[in-house]
Length: 205
Image (cartoon, rainbow, N blue to C red; front, side, top):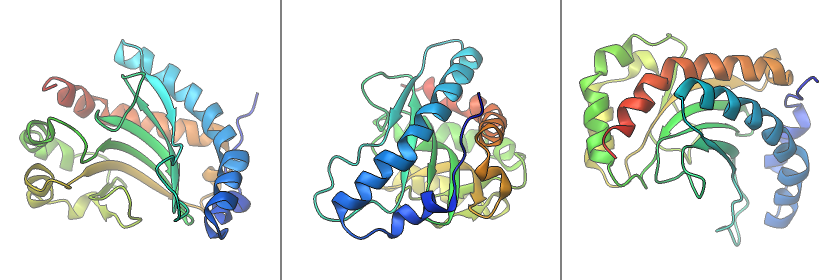
């Protein structure tokens, strides 16, 4: 069975006015695709990590007024939640698809995880050159791996709201985005490169 990718109408979801209206479109257009893609990635990660991981699809439940600017699936080794754990993400803004290994501000051992990443800074810099870095999961903006400096990881370590996400962006114009099987392939490739950093981070929990 061919897995569906994301079409122009999926990215246009984020231009729909109103919280209820946008959430309805996210639930009907995007989340079924997240379910399909996510199940494939859960099986892949479980096999490659040697332990069970769980799919979480963002509910945006805390929102009462502002509609979400993006939406995502997350995969973590905790069944109940993912935000307090290193996790893998795949999601959409209105102009791109993102594929991340995510360390967000809710991590209880953020400082220690940042130190692990700093210890492996040279290896991080050796990842594929099309990798991107985000310092705030709520914003579209990201820097290229070439722009990564130690100060970005130090900020993640020292600033309470500091975050660190590493992976890839695919423009909505990228033909691969329209093909679910190709999305899964590039996500697997991205995650494979990042699994060592995920595993290092888990050692400090």
